[in-house]
Image 1: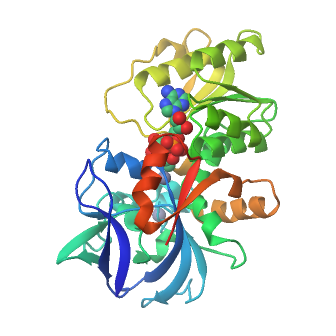
Image 2 (image 1 turned 90 degrees about the vertical axis):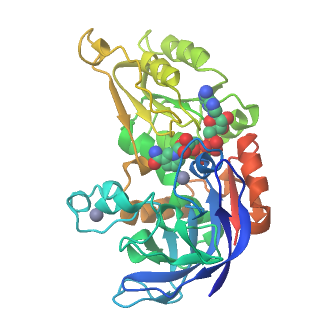
Length: 369
Ligand SMILES: NC(=O)c1ccc[n+]([C@@H]2O[C@H](COP(=O)([O-])OP(=O)(O)OC[C@H]3O[C@@H](n4cnc5c(N)ncnc54)[C@H](O)[C@@H]3O)[C@@H](O)[C@H]2O)c1
Ligand SMILES: [Zn+2]
Ligand SMILES: [Zn+2]
């Protein structure tokens, strides 16, 4: 079948919205109709060339929609079911899934390459196979995806809002709750307040942080952060560090969560300096470089510091469990999602969403399919 979709043919580059061909679902695959998809900074990394992936690639990874058709062997979904697509699939059977660490599922090995795990493609354009970004390609009206990439959700929550649960919200919430392990009374620094950072702010607030201190150079982000749970905002980490020391007997924050688009080694070092003894730096943003970070490692063990630096993928969430919990929080009014959507775009205008993200005009932009 034909589907209108945003495709990246070269990087650095812009999306081209074209008619692609989508195959029938094979065994354990599902033909889906996406309703909406958020634009995450991870999409932009592949547009601006700061990360490389195989091209051409049908883009997008933060979507929700409705099941159209199921392939042979699919028992967990039926046509008409609503779903959020998880940017990390979970097989439920590998040793990581079995431990409940489904964000580390072994199927993640297939994410960047884009063909299905059997090595064949389901999307094509002009005789070429298209890679599917993170296997899901949510900037397409239709796609064939693995059943492992979908989380069935109740039919009464708005798909054009809960699409954010496919990446940014779980990543940010989990960065605070699971990775930083925020506890009641903590002082937490959140560096970068886009869709991921604002979700980390909400996660820290939900976990009971006494102060949630946001650093973002953009004034609009700082203003919005205070409506989502931030108690203090600064435009530089130096000011935030001074402040958190002033309220913690000179010790620093229990955790610092790096959610800027392109964290640098200097950002990690500054965050490491800003945390207290026993504190944790969480690196959530995707660094553009692979240079080794210069961290004073004697502070990990000696000097009475016992500091931790940890990376996180999808906020260490378990998508099949956590997306449903997030829906419950949203329904209870405890997780703000609508407030995080600054603008909506038609698929044909997707490059405007990219420009607005790059210029700091959006918390999240959502594309309507
Ligand atoms: N680890 C994961 O699983 C995972 C998942 C999703 C996204 N990400 C990554 O998280 C990062 C954030 O994504 P997003 O969609 O929220 O991006 P975004 O562009 O919407 O937000 C980034 C924010 O950081 C701010 N910023 C830029 N430089 C800063 C600095 N030096 N100090 C403080 N703030 C600064 C920007 O003003 C912006 O508000 C990206 O790198 C993205 O690729 C990682
Ligand atoms: Zn993302
Ligand atoms: Zn698995």
